Length: 296
Image (cartoon, rainbow, N blue to C red; front, side, top):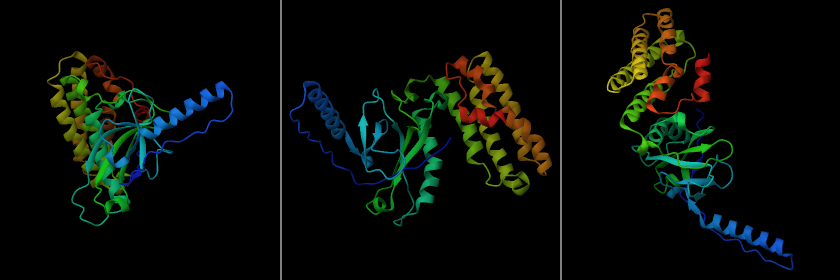
């Protein structure tokens, strides 16, 4: 998933209603002008400081989605909108000195996916083109005490309507499945070594394999408490995959790692979970970015 980080500031922009002088024009022109003025006034009244956004707020940015933002137009979620706040947290333990854009971005990269999954656990059910963005403190707002990060799902093109919040409507077995499944892929990508080849960082790749194995074991254990033939088949598939990841984690050299890694990676192909997801009443279309990775 592509993650972008538009920066936010503590300062808000006051809403200013535009005044439109209507001269000697035709009735239709007057009507159009009045409608335009009403729309402008409504947008102005909806302006809210980025600093005061709450989880669940749907909004339209004033301009491009990326860049420094001071205020956005907060709208009802049933209206077309560009983004929705799906999580927030405070940056802690960083002292009084601004840690820098790179460090703040690294924290948001780690935390926002976790916070977003609490709000919308089934990432397969997200609208097409929805990407994880976040508003972070600027160096200026940091000096005023701003430590908050707002995580948002934002449409990369166009808009979407309706709230993305699904956590409260999901059944216990659905939540159990999603918690375990999300943890597996988070372990895979969060522990991805920077080096391109195993030969360059065998220890890093083995650590990644160990993390995926642990997440898979927890997922398999969770699936044991869920009824369903397809869920049972998936559990067996993932149990075998966990064994392959364990072999990769214990590989003596790069060649042994590759031998174990191929079936291990194939074993967690998202396509293998479609039937179980259907049985559980969850979304069944593999997101394009994930499908591309396993398409090879």
